[in-house]
Length: 195
Image 1 (tube, one colour):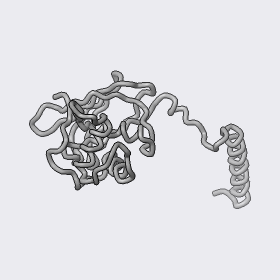
Image 2: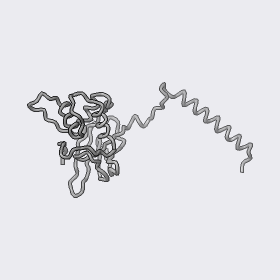
Image 3: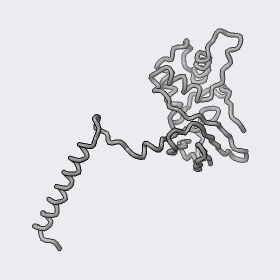
Image 4: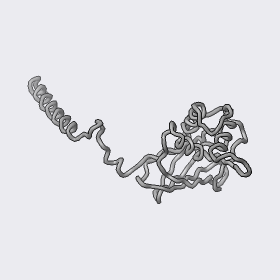
């Protein structure tokens, strides 16, 4: 058992080293106060919330994710979430999800940055990522207007124009989360996936 004097001496020594380490860390920290993570230079996080045609979470289903030749396998759990760190710079992938007694549902993935939801480009990308089919043939409607009409109709949102309002953004945010969505009209969406 060490004496109180030696314990105090050990504490002072450790404390002095910790203060030196803190000072070195502060000197090495770039402006903004965040230390760069060396791992972040090699990997990015990909998060996919798997939902069915009615926007219900696809829970507890086996999946395989392949990104640029790197494979991951798992289960969607209670949140319908596929969440992995993949190679930075990856641009393509494939997600397979198995349902009872059926061949896997297969989605081809294009991996890219997505703008914040506050920007129209971020909202438009999210609409397209949700797989909402649109057909503007024979109309003056733009792709975004058609997608917005489909999305708003499915979620019982008020009709609008091509402007993406706060309620639509809020519903898009919900659709991208792992929270259950209760307000979807059945048989409203047409999705494309490869079986």
